[in-house]
Length: 275
Length: 340
Image (tube, rainbow over all chains, first blue to last red; front, side):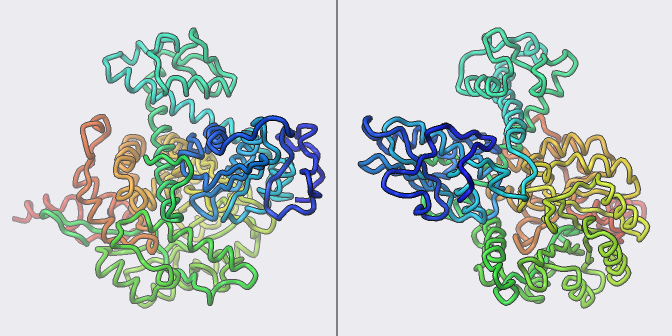
């Protein structure tokens, strides 16, 4: 919480780290992430705008929005433009690295909205709440926030899970094609532009673009998510099998998380979608 | 043992516990972790059928009689294998230690097997402890938590030289089965903690040991399956898979089972109730009745009676040299015919 406000791996943006109006940094309650927003002038956004911004924040492991998962306990904006978001997770011991990513991403998504004076993101009921909230507030990066406890930063981890999301997305896009009679071998020469439009396709393109993998109309549908290289002819059946099990793993895991969250809290989250 | 539709199932529960997580066992100053841990386990129980849920007080500390009734009397289990979890940072006498388990096992000969544990970061002291535990309790298996924190270390890999030293020693001591927790994240900060590639290396280099990956690496089941297809001595431990999914998420359970049957196969899957998180009764009965819920799953391998018998007990019986009465073996029918 009192770490110097210098850049961690996530990068501090100059001007964001000033003390909020009307209070010294030291007066903040412990365990809150807070920083000055884009200044007065614009009208504060409504809570629904903030919630919409949080739709873009995903659980990196489950590849679903934190809103839909029920992780947003509350979301409010005061008349003066102070945004308060409380986040919650399925267990007290959920992996702190993923928790850190979600709190930090939520901070970035909300604090970027015009018209906010301050942004406060609080992760509740977690064994590492203080370290995570304080670390995000100070934009200290994960390794600094867990001084001496975490060996590395999280970019690699996020990329690993994005690659899994690409594999899972490949199953989501290919399964309907196969069900409609497309031969597996035909998928080999298919480009993204030739696939009928769908939410699953948009999502697959987005995940591939995030990884810097080809995502345009002329890009092949089947690629190795590690290298971006097209899948070889004889590797198609195995590639599709791997895509399917990756999706199964992510969805089963999300199912367990939803069940645990429901057991832990008897209220629905803001924007929660039942699955 | 369990009988349904004329078929007899010998049940080995290869992953269960006897813990004390009540306030009398909490380490002063660390109560929040001790309480958070058991609450987290209790939430898993919420994924089972409502009529099997316990109050948190009962869940924190259950008696020997409760265990014997839930597991053996009501739960159809013939032999159960304790997997210890120490967590002495939070629990004064440990959460679920080899000694505690073995004391109960000694009262019920032939019913309970007490596995032990080791941590390669404990060095020579740990090796001595392992020797003493195996000698005293006759353990044939160990449970390992590669993601566990230990004196400033945030996890280890089974492929570390220190781990190899312990695996060699364990093998020399007569240990056959290495159960490794690779599943829902407990406490690791470091990204490598749930990676399964270390098991790949160890399984190749220690052909005399079996590696049972508990919870099938669930968040990363695909990594586990790709690895398990290549290693004949790697098994899928179904604890949490059946308890956590079969009732709460039947569709996902069907998919996970289908994937495991395809990649790993019914000869290398073992049942574990994870008691007291879930009672074995509903898991055994539900698993025997289980089939894919619809045609949507038609390209997955089917699971027949023989496969269920293997998964529920015969596979684990082989791993632990447990003698299975003739009428429960796969060739029981053939023998009866031959003897007629």
